[in-house]
Image (cartoon, rainbow, N blue to C red):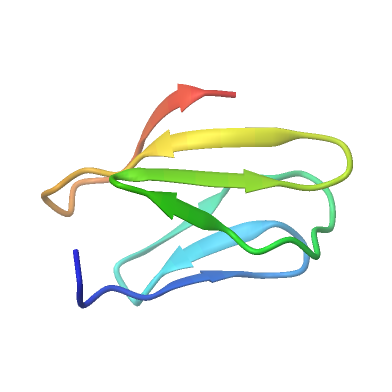
Length: 65
């Protein structure tokens, strides 16, 4: 996973390079997404979520929301 780029938009969506787009938060966020191993952590002032990213590009699995 060393060659991947994660981008989080102000409305809360996270994009993983050009491979996919995940609407992870429902409200605006100014926080940076964080990777801890294969876990994607995102939050804003109203909610937070943790997604387990797959080693193979097949789509994320929700771990905690």
